[in-house]
Image 1: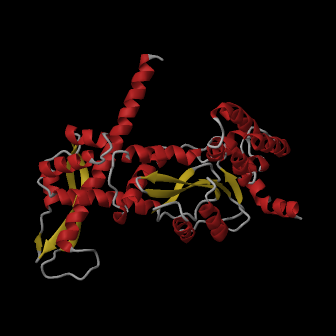
Image 2 (image 1 turned 90 degrees about the horizontal axis):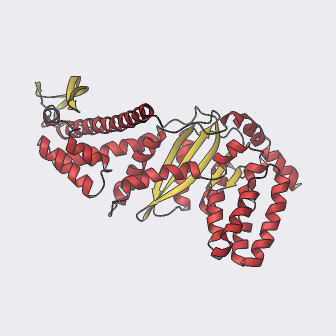
Image 3 (image 1 turned 60 degrees about the vertical axis):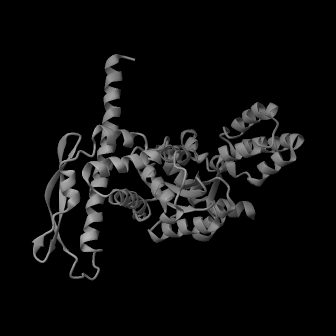
Length: 400
């Protein structure tokens, strides 16, 4: 690869990293401002006591980031007609939140020991309380969680919803990823629970519906097969939805029952099965695979039959080969979970009562969403939409 291209790529990566850290630093700055305003003025719209100041708008201000002055909105507060100087603003005028030490903490993921080190660094250098800095971090991540779970979903024509869970510590974060008619992916919402159970999924779906998620025809739901997911889909979106079971989840489940010496042959048959263009051809290979597994292991065959041929739904819908790569599994959502795991892998103790897992997950997921690409084969989505519109009718004709 030419050196010029390599250098350009390196510069591009550096700019992405620096841009992300500037954004994180600004969120921390405004979090500190908000935290101090609440301390001196109380919460917005609450009754004011004599000892509390009142909010007085904002003025243009500036802080240092990476050795440069950055414009910010400086909040104002007044008490008995006199201006109240915010300690946080004064402290940040003489401290660079993106100095080398703080940047090192940010690049390392800001988790466990790194998180404490970052708090020590910022608090010690600015003279602010460590608890105030910590509250600012919490507020910033809570805003990310609220942003995901409050966005208006009514403006999109949704085609598919992928649902999966990321397990962090002793908790599960159930995430819904939507694909619209333009092939754009969006994080629809997330909920934290002890497990991927009915109540967590129900609350997630209820939240989507409350925010205007519309079902204009059958949707293509891509799921891992959890019974709680199916139950919630039936309740909130009807029993006539197209269900695609994640082929990778089911492949792993079946292979758990097979001797290692059969893994290669099973993978070959599985790949051939899901590569068929014709649904009739796929059904023939499916029956052959059921018989073959039955000769090797009863549980393996039962696992395949349990899926009720729903790993073949995208073939039945005549989804194009390129588009099929997106909807055959929950890979698009699995891949972004890696960012959540990388951000949180060193954390040993999670505080479920503070929504900590969900807040960290939301922050990582939104960062990943900024880099989402249009799904491959998006030009074939109109064909998929037409197939979904007639999906219910086709099912009724088969049943008759």
